[in-house]
Amino acid sequence: MVEKEQLKNFRLENFQLKSGIKIDLDLNYLAFGNLNAEKSNVILFPTRYAGTHLEQGYLINSDFPINPNDYFIIIPNMFCNGVSSSPSNTEGNFSGPNFPIITIFDNVCAQKKLLNDVFDINELKLVIGWSMGGQQAFQWASYFPDMVKNMISMCGHAKTTDHTFVFLEGVYAALTSDPEWKNGNYERQPEKGKTTMARVWAGWAHGQNWYRNKNYLKDGYKNPSDVLDKLWNKIYYHRDANDLIAMMRTWQEHDISNNDKYQKNISLALNSITAKSILMPGINDLYFPPEDNEIELRDIKNGELRTIPSDFGHYAGAGKTKSDLDFINKAITDLLIN
Image (cartoon, rainbow, N blue to C red; front, side, top):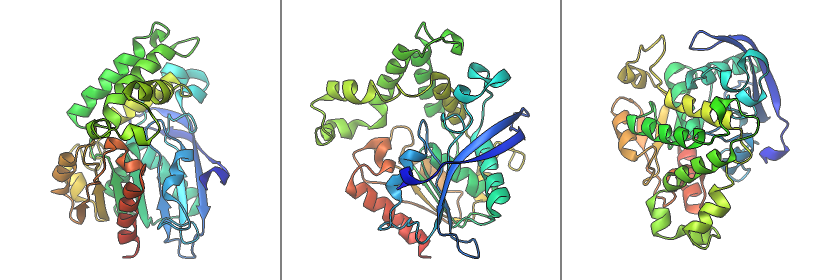
């Protein structure tokens, strides 16, 4: 369904980042469905690490709770994903490795400006996201609590943990070990580095149960080596290396309390969330384990934990199986009907 929608552009001129840097940015997005007269039926579904609007269709269907006949759906592309402003598509002083760090907070502030300036929208029926999309959902619900009525974070955190930060440093080292990297000033893509990086991801993304229970056979792979050769060796070939690094830095910097309002007080930031919230970790997710969401829920007044009982690790939030998709859609339904 999303493939048929026209990509739209929102230009942010002289936009001030959290770092203080001012930059012209393009926020590219999809907006479709039926917007009611009150503008109270809006669903925001931001993208994930290395993902674009094209991967967001798995939760949008006339037979699903996120039904474009009933809701107005906005899918903003994260900065640095190669569609919105990124190192790879920016010219001048901020091109390539000179592109500034853009935080989750920056993304959300830009999205709010889009909603206000283009659509005059001041209320969100639901903000939902998977992975880094889930981080954006957290930021939205915390920093703009009066706007967000319901929030679902699938396999996401309110703040990047030390463990995940260290993991990402390993991924960074793998990519930049390629001699072609040249501190981001490469003449051709560091493909060996991207392949090495992908092989690091491969042991983390699906988790142990996906391999232990040989779920890869159901997905058409003969063995783990086949998974590496046919899936992971190619997964980042069409992505720009500087974009991949920039999004890692966005992930590492993530902290919903690191702003003027909460001054790095994570408990205060979580306690500010008034939206009905469902946190949905994958039971075997190595990036965002359920225990981390359990800790966050101690400070969320109207929050609930629903752990996705999936063998797919972090990909539990991607709805790769019917049971995973049904589990996610049940949570969405429970929020939207209230």
